[in-house]
Length: 173
Image (cartoon, rainbow, N blue to C red):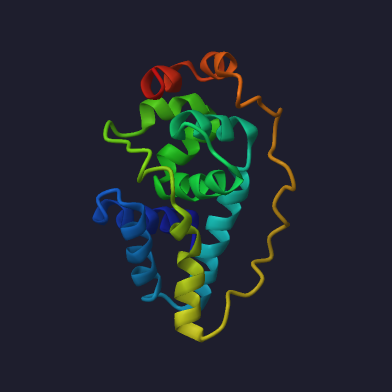
């Protein structure tokens, strides 16, 4: 499975789920069950690589503003959700986290959106159903121990408003 096929699966499941992350995860599992186990491992590898790429302080700050706070676990779920939003949103957020203000739909709901934990387990669940075993080692280097970039003080609302002016205006004012 190449990167384009990965994103096509993510996008199709999101569109069919009408943006509901839990439904998207269920649909993704269903679609992965139609693939052979090696393709499911490829999907898992693509997902995990992007999950690690998104482990950055600047994205955590954006999640903090969007969700009105984001613990370690909440940020993990946010990164899964961000991947689930598709290539344009994911890459756009990595390029400029404040651009999420323009990339996200008007109906963003912090109670539902921003939490894609189940998406992170879709490949594991599909692989186990197909083979009866867990996903083998993906052959990726371990993820970073700490987020990339310079740490942010999430409690400093003035600094967050300055760092993420568009997100702050849209989601916090």
